[in-house]
Amino acid sequence: MILFLPLLFVLLDFQIYSKLNSLYIYRFSNSTKKIILYSYWFFTLITLTTFFIYYLSRPYHASEKTYVLVMMLSTSIFTIYMMKILASIFIILNYLLNLSLKIISLIKKKEHIKNNVLSKTGFIISFLAFLLMVYGILYGRLDYRVRYETIYLPNLPSSFEGLKIGQISDIHTGSFFRNREILKGVKLLLEDKPDIIFFTGDLVNFHSSEALKFKKSLSMIKAPMGVFSILGNHDYGDYTAWKTPKDKADDLNNLINFQKNIGWNLLIDENRILTRNNQSIAILGIQNWSAISRFPKRGILAKAHYGIEKIPVKLLLSHDPTNWDAQVRKNYKDIDIMFSGHTHAFQAGIEFGNFKWSPCQYLYNEWDGLYKKGNQYLMINRGFGYIGFPGRIGMPPIISIITLRKGKH
Image 1 (cartoon, rainbow, N blue to C red):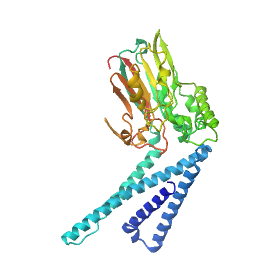
Image 2 (image 1 turned 120 degrees about the vertical axis):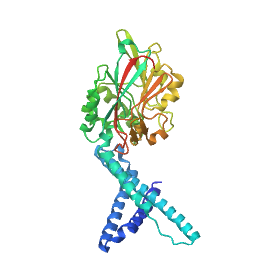
Image 3 (image 1 turned 90 degrees about the vertical axis):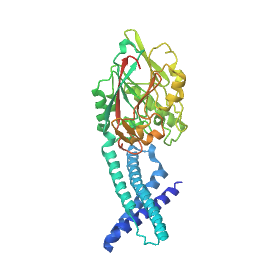
């Protein structure tokens, strides 16, 4: 597979260069043509070399500088070849169009005139797509937005009327370059002065050391009633290579201790009871549990739920939203709201007024925002950070502020 992909890349580059030559390059002088030819294939060689380094070395567990370099290079490959694949689709469609026109002209015994409108359109669209990706990397990834929601619960104790919850998720500290990038979003969260803050998993990408660089910024995340957090699928170190199982276990323990050291209440299949004026609500937090087979099923909801049966309001933190339909709605009807993250809303999509679309909706039934089924709610935060593609296009990072009110659903 590793050898097959570069071969596809080379074939794709031949197609793109041939079409560029037939449409535009042929008009230049011979010396200019040579410069374009050598530059194009030199750049392709560098790209393919980077591809091999990236996939053969997999240096995620190496130094932070190495990881940042690898991420930047792999992103460049992704961006460039997405643009080329898009242009290639239009070139193929143009070929099929000309083939159809040629057949028609033969039947009608008329001269066939080659049409290149689709190929030219493809190059224009791919260039615009490239600009969108650049925008997402330079601006979209840090374009933090605040989303406000009000949830009415008939069983909410009067002492918790108006409780303001701040939710953030999927910080993915390993993807950020500077403290001020995270600090920008943290300040926006704190401006709303939430009573309590929930972090719903994925603090890191691959290993716990990623978070250390941002300890000062993360330590600022505080609230009067506390900060409650859980582990996401990336927090377990499953996506990198470890010398021994002990190294992996130690890294998870380091991450757990890090969250405790900055004052967060990390919930690992457990609950906390918050009390005001002799009235109580319960916060439950479980490890990652997903209905999708490729993600871990570590969480034990029964354990987190134990002992709080008589508490009138239960708020669950569970990283993966598929847990809502698979477990919560089936077996735990007394859990009022589940708070999740994980989806990132694919880091790309369209949001305009009440209209919202993303490829993410074809993978998840619930993927962004507030959902209600029966008397239960699911609140999905699309994420504070990013992973893979270091940008966001049309789906900016979100800070959720949820206010609880006593009243009918």
